[in-house]
Length: 231
Image (cartoon, rainbow, N blue to C red; front, side, top):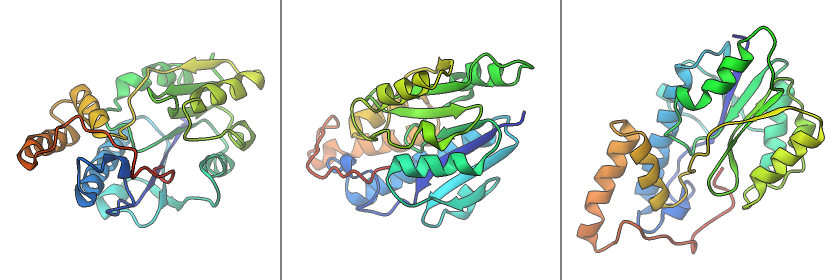
């Protein structure tokens, strides 16, 4: 299958990764959970039928994460510009994924994989909506940065705006299942329930058991430390 899968991600430093998990997590715990999410996502991508796998990275990936991937640096600018830069690197079918949906599975991508492995694909694009209004997957059979550039990211309407951009270009867009981005700890609990038995689920379970001992409810959400550099 002539498919390139690109995972856009960043190095998981305490205080810079998954800051909306703080509280109830400490900066170190949030960064460690982000790393588990990233590693699990990459392991899933290794199992997918792709000709090329790119890790589009901000920082230096762990050696285990880099295995099986061509590591390239993220482009400059806002997220839409960095996504557009990925499109400019790839000539053939491209699927872009983030690192915030560790519950990702092959089944959730099955419609795209079946369509694009056929002799005459029906869909020119695929979009995976996120429950927070963003998107977790963007597939372009003929990558074009102009289809992404200028779409405002990290808003409750990003997914809708991206879908409208694709539709306005005359593309037939397939819709993948809605997934939960892991931004708050309640999101991590929800994602863990969808991928029970995985390293991410075990990590979340371990954290959840420790939080009550520290006097913290496991459903605490706080935007006080939120940043717009999560992706």
